[in-house]
Amino acid sequence: MARHHRPTPETPANPRPVVFLTAAVRGRRCILADDAPFETLRSVWRNAPEADGWFVGDFLLMPDHVHLFAQPGPDAKSLAGWVATWKSISARLLGPTVGGGRLWQDDQVGRFIRSPREYEETWACVRMNPVRNGLCGNPEEWPWKGRILDLRFRRD
Image 1 (cartoon, helix red, strand yellow):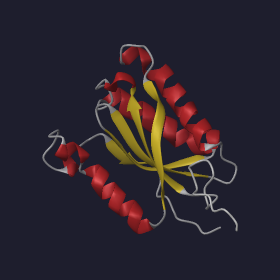
Image 2 (cartoon, helix red, strand yellow):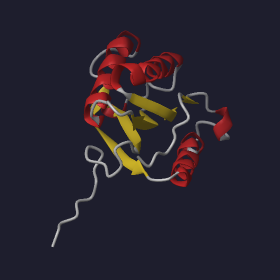
Image 3 (cartoon, one colour):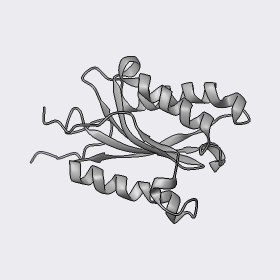
């Protein structure tokens, strides 16, 4: 009998899956919900398709962590390699403005998003994080969110 392995972010069933990631600041310091981290991360993620083959969709910065949706292109770096790259670049660029030291925790949480409906449901939940945490009255008021690209689901 053949064994079936559950896909992980490094071995997806779909070669171009949409991945939902959460990455936290080391020590859970509350430093991300500000202009400099927002602009830095948005810039790094805008350059990711050309630099690393990864495309970022919607994202939201909380004070001590970030949520984002991403999808690899055909010649993309591994997920682990890409995450390490954007964490390294953003830490180098933000270090002076956020007090130096290591910016990111070494790990991150990721899971596959298998359909447009699951993407929308997950994004709807993520958008409510600032409201649930008492940081704003409704999700439209939270300034630290955005969309780099409109990610598409592929069946190739």
